[in-house]
Image 1: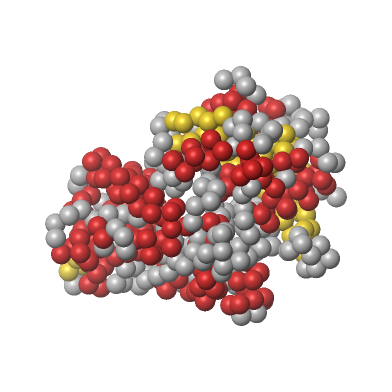
Image 2: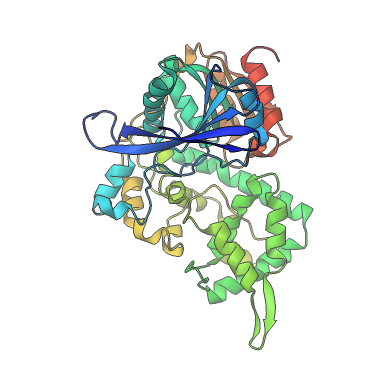
Length: 433
């Protein structure tokens, strides 16, 4: 029996589904996928079509709402919503440093995690859809990596979709991870320049912190080894609407005077640890480059290799001169598996995934060119996390896809202005805008 409960404006029910680990071996091992069903408390929802939400990531469970807030309120006007914790995340069968040793060594762990990409997630959706809707197609809303999954859905099982809505998540269809990160570093440089234009006082603050870290390399209370490159990776914040402000406030209280001289403040260290740790979502780091794997080539720690093509990001060279320190983001690098205690036990597993060459193809360009599913996508101008040009190239490939290209939001437009974004996408998909 499924237990239902209430939050303001919404009735929720927790649901669990058993799916094959490997959908090509349906009689083999099974894992659990968790989803939270939501219907409007005032409008009901039993007779409404379904919308399944795919969170960004990889490695993040579905948004935990407090009642019918943000885009969920708008969605519940038209739909019954299923908030899916993709395999390995949230309340689904977990995959992290604590559980993965149950699989065996690094090789067994890597083989297991090879089943945690968009292709397996979509096959989970199809198994769940047949159980939930009785076979009727549903609408998918994909945010960021969830949009990558939605694009694969259109390639692999379009018969399961009534509509596809994508926000900040149109992937490159055939580009290698090198293409993704080669395009990413110039965006990171632009985002850093924009931050310093807003907060010029942060130029000297960032240089001072990086110089201190280069000399001391402190280990934070939670065990995180804070190097200058780790500090630079706080640029991950700059891809969100309020990220520049959050970074500024983080930098402004970095140092305190102690009897031994200036030292990094406890508050700064605590906040940095929270911002940089992957303890809550390790699959983001472990699978981040694997989501681009296809075409018979290894990803081979692409972000780290591509960084070498942009020497302006080298902290040591920057500190030897007088240039502003550049921040990085949306780039998982191998040193993170030494710095972060949540990732250290998974370093060998991540190495094996980086060497893998047998990734299946994710996108069928011929099928996408013949698409008949209504599709609408929000493309954020100069999105730090997903390259705009790559997204627009993909949009031109998918038959009938209608785009909304906007500079009103950063990558988190669905979070900060969910009702408006969702309303616009629904209108586009229905041909009303």
